[in-house]
Length: 478
Image (cartoon, rainbow, N blue to C red; front, side, top):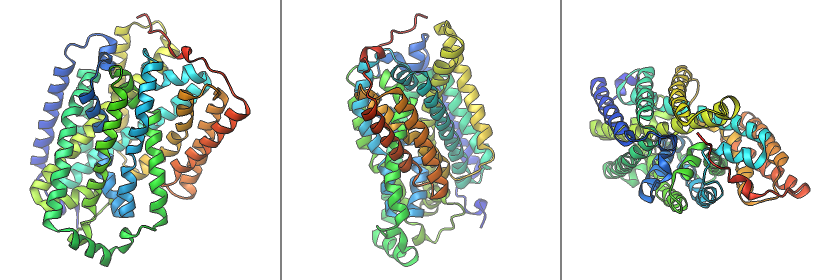
């Protein structure tokens, strides 16, 4: 059975919904960013973001389209541990809470995660870190673009490339117009849409089928999904925990928020965001477990969430899923575009080529970079070379290797620059080897383990003595 035959939404209705949300977000982008004239206002919202908006933007950004589509995929492939393992991504937010407080205290004038690595470990480690961070950011961008295309194709039969193109273009547009204030402003609205949509879907699923029927069908047709002893699923559980920590600890998406929050807000914002986020993958993944009870045709594992919801709930379910995942997609894409553009402009363009650039010049460069990143992501999304889970977890080995250099560098004076550099290189290499030799579900686990051993060993063998005041680099005089 083709996807056109299983699609619930008419393409015309899907296009209308996408167009309405695009117009809404572009309008909000203009509204939130209309007074931002200075560089700090455009890229960090003036460093005055409060607790409510701060919590919403952290949670909404972490509720990516990958969460709402990969959690069902992993539940469909790995069962109970798949969705619970994905929910352990909340640990990254919870553990970053004290780090956010320390970052804001140690670096009141910081702009990027690269600023910290450069000042703490020197240029070699900084450039290794930039390579890892930019590679991860591009992988995440591509996975988000792919999710947009997969979503619209699964629900309405709209060709993959058309849905992906329109959603990428919408996010690039309002991020360009409104900057970081538009990002966090729309995140607040998107977090509400996501939470309401998930609760409604779960409630309707339970009401329509019931726990007993779902359990009976799973036990009869796919009993391995109920097993708590599936080896791959158990490894994934710990792998995803470390992957989530690596994603958050290193990524400029989360560091920009730490810099943009008011003094004292960051720790509580990340703590609350982690608590609110934890149940979301379990609710999203649970929907996929209804698939055997429905006898639904699933042409690809990463389509299981929207197909089951639309099959079970008809037009209403399809509309809810489209709205919810579009909100999740936008809340992550805009954040990633803004943060990655900032990393490229501050750490590559400004630090390497234009050290005397004015604030206005850098603001323009940031806008141009957002546009170029959108085009590059679109080109890489076109072939759709892999599934969402495999693409995102390929980057896991790289980002997990940064966990210990970042955490140790923020708290231990004695961690040295050579140890940090070696930990990132060897951790990434070992993780990638494990990814190809064993599976995508162990790359981050191995990368983090090797990185930890290297950091601990080099700190013990050759302790440094870092002066924390060196992190208080004064703001550039633009």
